[in-house]
Length: 183
Image (cartoon, rainbow, N blue to C red; front, side):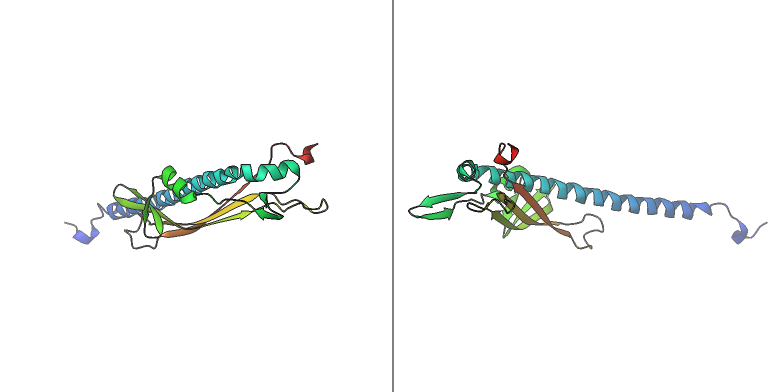
């Protein structure tokens, strides 16, 4: 009769279990990374769509100046030229596109009863084309730029890991279809 410690049947079982657990942990981390990339991409696309809408809504303000010369959104009030641009309501558009709910100072996406991500700190900047620039300098075009803070709680790590936080930076430029430069 052999002693029990010399019996080697079943020695591969702990190795197999540890390999399977390692594969599961690595695949969970990869799936979580893919989930974060998909959420960030979807938010970026929605913000891009909203900022493009802002740029095209300023069309009526910008077109007249572009048609007459190379200037942006300006209007004449008495003897003064004043900038006339609008930043639009991007949060409202994002709420409609992404199904967000407002909570405190943030907009939250809730899926399956849990917070999926949070948007806050929207900053919209409009760069108007200059009024009657000289032809020697490159002409700056009408540009709308938005930065929004995205926070996504991680599902990997049983909520012990801090959430992913990123600033999503998006820019849209209004360009007339036909310009003098193309002639």
